[in-house]
Amino acid sequence: MILLQICIGFPVNVFLLLFYGWVASTRHKLSSSALIQTNLALANIMIFLSWGIPETMSAWGWRNFLNVIGCKVLMYFYRVARGLSVCTTCLLSVFQAVTISPSTSHWAGVKTKLPKCIVPSCILSWVLNLLINSGIPRYTSGPRNTSIQITYDLKYCSVTTVSVETTLINTVVYSVWDLLFVGLMGASSSYMVFVLHRHHRQVQHLHGPGRSPKAMPEVRAAKCVISLVTLYILLYGRQTIMVNILINMKGNAPQLMASHLVWSFTFSVFSPFLIIHSDRRMRKFWKRESPVRNMDPS
Image 1 (cartoon, rainbow, N blue to C red):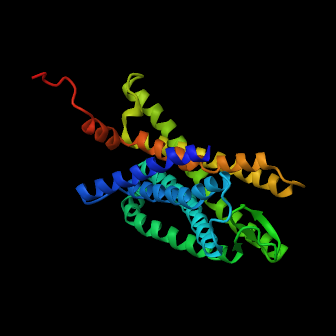
Image 2: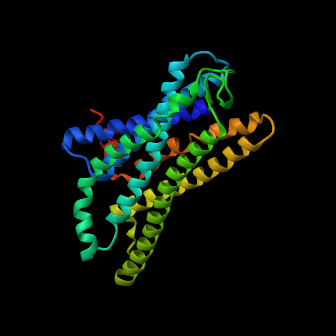
């Protein structure tokens, strides 16, 4: 299942990255939402490379294919990529919520300044995640290092800890960090649902039931972001519950662990498809690249 997810999700994220790179090279500038989505695709690619491929090799019986340095590097980049996925999804939801907000005097100034903050925000998310996860290499070692207590055995690597207090502090820090962005996602998505509902009622009142707001690009983009955030929050809740179950179980649960690993890649697989579905440029690209129909037989 992990290999199937990699075979589906990795090429789609690479395509998304290359497509926006092609758009940037032809138009010399990407939209703010495209910049954020490019950052999300890059984070998904890093997750597949640093977590998916080693897990697939381990599932096929490979164990000692990484040394201590390789384990430290892979685990560090996986944690950075996971944090980038959280920050980028949150940034995309906040940006889209401001974009579809009413053009009042209060929001007008924010809307004009927001596009200029996208690149610094993406850079800041990289810097913060590189710093907050800087302690990961310290607690990562090679497979089955029995010199100290193992808290999380990945077969090919192991995450260790020195004391219970250190584990508690790390858990609190990472949980608060994730919950902060998940809370912002939920608030911005709820606001978008409220704005879309009010807009839908206004359109039906002014133009009758025949006028549908689905054709508007900002509405389509907002629905995509709401779907992304909903998917992430559901998967985050499942992951939190499953991790607590695995930690508190008095024994090994290989089937639960395997299902937990399979579900951990779901967001990286489905998120690019939601982005592609909401982008009109993608459909125009495929139509232009598709073979011309009704060609002259001569």
